Amino acid sequence: MEQILKAKAIDKKFGSVYACDNLSIELYTGEVVGIVGESGSGKSTLLNCLSGSLVPDGGNITYLDRDNNWLDLLSLPEPRKRNLLRTEWAFVHQNPRDGLRMAVSAGGNIGERLMAIGYRNYSQIRAEATEWIEKVEIDAIRLDDKPSIFSGGMQQRLQIAKNLITKPRLIFMDEPTGGLDVSVQARLLDLIRSLVRELGLSVIIVTHDLAVARFMANRLIVMKNGKIVETGLTDQVLDDPQHSYTQLLVSSILKV
Amino acid sequence: MLEVKNVAKSFNLKNLDKGKFSVIRDACFNVNSGECVALIGNSGCGKSTLMRMIYGNYVCAVGKIYIDKENILDLKAIEMSILRKQKMGYVSQFLRVLPRVSTIDLVMEPLLDQFESRARAKDIAETLLSRLNLSSKLWHLSPLTFSGGEQQRVNIAIGFSKDYKLLLLDEPTASLDRENKRIVMDMISEKKEKGSAILGIFHDKEVRDKVCDREIDVSNFSAS
Image (cartoon, rainbow over all chains, first blue to last red; front, side):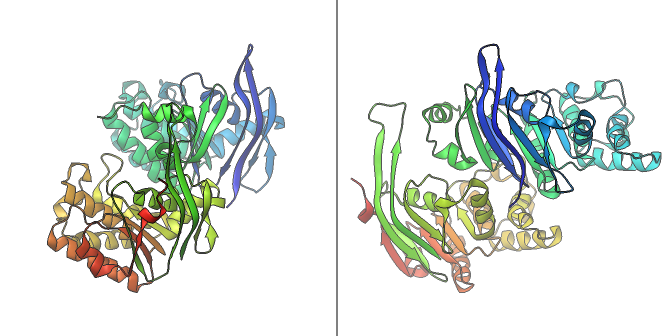
């Protein structure tokens, strides 16, 4: 069992408020870790620190790259970091507009990421883009349409295809099904789950929806006020929560 | 295969006054490979709680639980989830699955997790579902719309798709008719012959008499 990402003693303050207060987290290859907590608990800030879009005030983060080198992410040169983001990592945003270029065709959005890692052969790019757009259950005839005329669920699936086409090893997801209809949500979660299994991905997924966490994550981290209050196997944290805050959270779920 | 040693369990509901409940104390027993052991005792005496601790679903803070000579209470979450996938199946009374995923895909999932090929996984899943008398018309539907008995058989198919070293069964035949109950009893006997250690809760005495080698009365471990 191999670690892929290690973060130690991460601090991040906004003004006088700690969004991340001395947080340590490790992720193993093939593991899906869910981070849950109410809004303002610091879960997105933690995700942004881990993925390099925010610089923490303190702590250190290391990542084991494809060539088996541990990289110190906080001192990594900017070009190398950008390269990682394009090749070995992916970030799925809650709002697909943050992860897509709305004025570029669906195929262009996907192909762009392939070109960024050196693909030059147009027909090959198109073939792979077609394969992936079908994988996320969008009809291939929509390849030349712009995502601005797609539904929210399709946009989100397109964003996932765009992120996964380069076969990343580590994926950060921030409320990937947050703005979607429940009917679309279940299928999308199942899609993500089977891709995770097929490709052996490691995933950190932030969600405030405990049902999403139950179906997606092997392990759960519960955050409150910038601190980790509880962590463990997902079903154990949800079925036998130990911390008073987790108990409150779990006992407050509405059931239909 | 399974050894439970001096296990105790209490629940502490921290948002309530007097929210502390002791359920089990000093539970000790073991289950060998090729053996089926029944947990018995009155409703509420802690049978399911004990079983859930063995599965790692409930926290066990006191005692030791060995599976294949490994104390699972020492394992990290990731190690426990790997141990589950490799060695331990759990059939609960309730079906809890992602909506809109087809029955056949659900049964195939544990097999795919262990890198079986899709074709082989499909083959095994179809054989199991047919054996459990689930009409092939239903295979491509989500089981969430099925009847209680059908859902229970889907759960059984998921738990029996692999030859786990340890199989935990929480009332697997509770809502089944005679014919299907007989089939499930046969399946349990076959798993025993293949060397699985089986721990089960069966309220049905006929099932216990037919498939179980021993009984453990959980009320002997009652904390109250």
